Amino acid sequence: MPDIYTRKERSEIMSKISGKETKPEIIVRKFLFANGFRYRKNDKKLSGKPDIILPKYKTVVFVHGCFWHGHEDCKYSKLPTTRREFWEKKIGDNILRDNRNQRELKKSGWKILIVWQCEIRNKGEREKRLLELIKEINV
Image 1: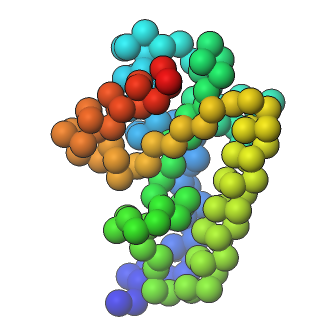
Image 2: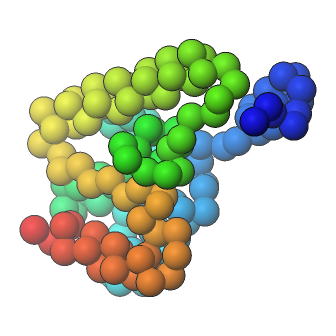
């Protein structure tokens, strides 16, 4: 199915997507705070500027959007049919960058946890995933 927007309109729409303070990040942060966890956000000193840093637990949490970070076997990570080569490269580069950042963090002794957007999309799944996140932090 062709895009309903022109290339210029689509480019403008995509350029307005922010990588910080996303709804999934806010959901995870509010849950952690309500459960007694104190954290820092987007520390530039750490590789990849993790979304949530829990220094007490030497743990970082990345809240990844399924599309932008290429979540495997997820219906929300489906690439557009237009400009497919561009999107394959863009998402592929994001995955490589994520892997590189995670390797550097692990080398520095950080535990890395990832919460995918699809895991917290609906309330039932969200509560289950966030309770699991607390267990992962405390391990």
